[in-house]
Amino acid sequence: MDNCIKINEKTWRIEDGGVRFYLFCGDERAALIDTGMNMPNAKEIAEKLTDLPLILINTHADPDHISGNSAFDEFYMSPDEEGNYKSHGGNGKFIPVREGDVIELGGRKLEIIDIPGHTPGSIAILDREYRVLVSGDSVQDDNIFMFGEHRNIAKFIESMKHLLQYDGEYDEIYPMHGTFPVKPGLVSKLIEGATEIVEGKATSTKVDVFGNDVSLYKFDYAGFLCDPEIKAK
Image (tube, rainbow, N blue to C red):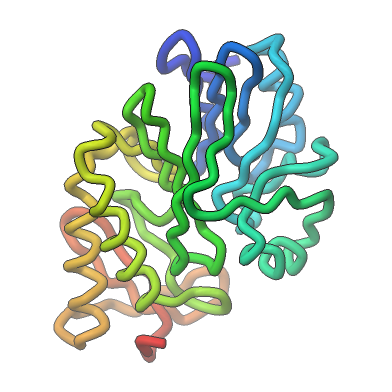
């Protein structure tokens, strides 16, 4: 499976075109983190990599992160993401997770951090044992979608400031898009860029994204795809 890349003895990243998802293994069970864009067989792929009982955690519910969810009877996700999930045809049983919840894999604990903004229920996942933060779409060096329904750039800025509280507790960020991995310093840069956008200090170009007229604010570390009229909601 060329798209399955071993990071270490207990961690894999699974590449699915322009998006990726992850398999984290503990001593007692394993967690699939998201299920990609074109991977209805994501669970089957994970089961070829580990014999451990498998659970699913979703960082958020945009369509390119839930393609294989239907193979799971239940999954962990923020309850604030339920509307977004159902609007994209998602089904299955929610196991709600909130800030500070810890999912135990056996010798490997995954701590939930709420980071709304990109979507209402976006979460990050802190793996203290391996000093890694899984960031979903919120922290990446590609173009971050911040246009259309569910997006809130003001909350995004607040969430990135919240992530700064965890500085020193992880060495690498595992994003779902863009370069793998990225460094913690990217969080501060994203705060600066998003703040410049809200304050009207950044310049943009008009681009078409899936038939939508969108403003692209491109910085040297990442981009933001925003509604033409930015409002700090």
